Structures are given as C-alpha cells and as structure tokens.
Image (cartoon, rainbow, N blue to C red; front, top):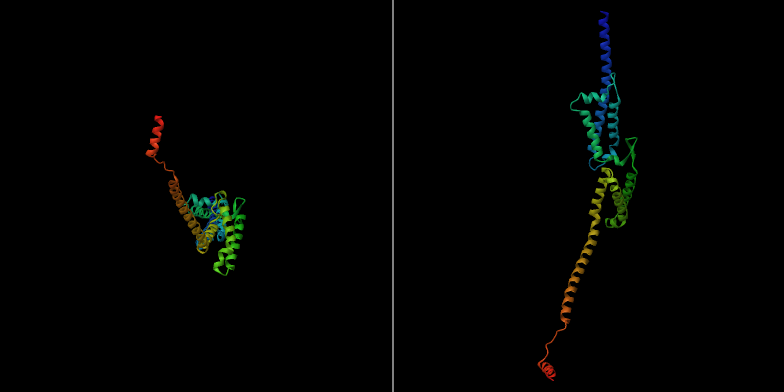
Length: 255
C-alpha cells in the first residue's frame, strides 16, 4: 500500500513539474504571438507612405527576441519549448509566422538602414541612412522656405542634384536598391514632385535643342543639293570642232 501511494505521489509530482514547464512554454508562446501581432499591425499602419523600416524596428526586434527565447528555454526532459510547437504541430504555425515576419523585413531591405551588431538586428541607424536623411532635410527646408513656386526650381536645384546623386551612389553600391524601402519611397516621391514642378524647364531646353538640331539638318541638306547643282553648272563642256578647222587639219596632212 505504501508503495502504491509512493508511486502515485511520484506521478503527481512529475505531472506538476511537466505542467509547470508547459505553462512556462505557453507564456513564451503567448509572448511570441503578441510580438508577431504587434509587428503585423505596425507593418500595415506604415505601409503608405512607407515608413515601415523606421517605425517597426522595435516590434521586429521583439519578434526576434520572443522566438529566440522559445529556442533556448528548456523544461525537465531537456526539450526546448520550440520543439513542442513545431514537432507536435503539423501546421508549424509558430515557425511559419516567424519566417513570414523575417521575410517581410528582408524583402523591404530594412536591415540596410540599420547596423547589424553581433549578428543581430540593431536599432543603430547606418551611416548611409544618416547622410541621406541630411540631404533630404536640406532639400525639404529649401522647398518649404521658397515662397514663390516659380523660384523653387532655381533655388533648390543644387540641393536636389546632391540628394539625387547621393541616392544613386548608394543604390549602386553592392547591388543595393536605394538602401531600405523607406528611402526608396522617399526618393520616388521626390522625383515625382520635382518632375511635376520643374521638368517644364528641362523640357523647354530640350525643345530648343531639338529645334536647333532640325534647323541644322535642314541647312545641311540644302547646302548639299546647292553644292551639287553648282558643280554641275561649272563643269566644262567639250565642243565639237567646226568644219573649217577640220578642213585646215586635212589640208595640213595632205602637204
């Protein structure tokens, strides 16, 4: 009887430990669910205009931390918590959500706007991003301080060129595409703004160039045909000898 009670006690004790371990893993799972939910919500709210990389770096780091905690936490039989939700879950919901979150972050190339420290995504902004923001700020200050719209293109031309050239330089570096998607969206918006307000001056210069080119082509064609006509008029004509000259030549030969 005593042995039976002892066995029951051991079974209940083991069940209590397992339940406690499962509760700990459940808490970690819930933390991951909350982090993933907040990251998704942040992504949707910052999808247009695109400020996803700037505004969602904290929720993304929370996703990474929550998932990492599940991979290192172990319960009594030295089984990781993550194994419970992957090996025993044929749908692999936890793993799928994690991979989708990482894929979204990488697809936007948000990692290029920040530094990677110790193999982990940090909140420290990269030097290229800082320089781009400085050039963009200078351009926007010029735009906002220009009262007359007609003066915009002339006054802000240099700052626009500096911004555009810097963006092109970093977008061609290591096959990057304008660093992260936030900067790509900013630059596309800037190009559209400049094109609407200032491209008329560029088009005006293009019209002048095209007009001059057409006039030069016409003058070249006219000169060519005029020269051809003039040469034909000046070509010497060989006249036939008169009968009188032929008679003198014949008389000279007979003598």
